[in-house]
Length: 159
Image (cartoon, rainbow, N blue to C red; front, top):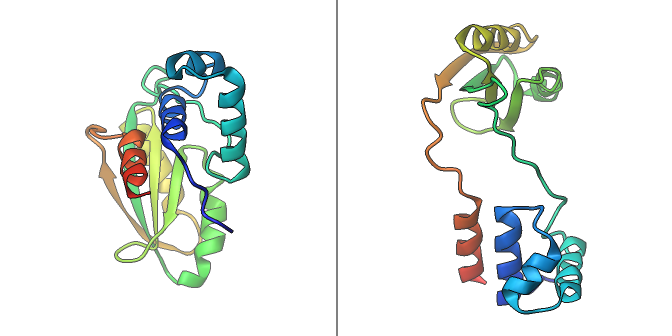
């Protein structure tokens, strides 16, 4: 597949959509001094090229009562159990992210919980999965960096 070429207008469109995926194309067009049809066509081309995949919604979990974040490293008895363990992890809705990793852990998860007691229950659920040898938990004190734009701008500079 050929590499899709993005120009400065595409960069600006993506920049605005990353800031707020619900920004109307007409608003983007006004800011960039182009037509809404042009924005629509360019977004459609980026979707077809697989650069844009859907859109997402950001929730304020603190306002929903889920302000406790923990990261759990999972050690498996055997790496052949990875798929099975991931299927069980997927059944725990409070595990919001799971990565198969190299190094110290076989799987690394992000857990969202109401408080420490709730987190303890979730971690015990992870510990109880067949194939899990043990877990190691780190508590997030604060999310200091969560910036999608910095990476995007670095990528644009490389293109």
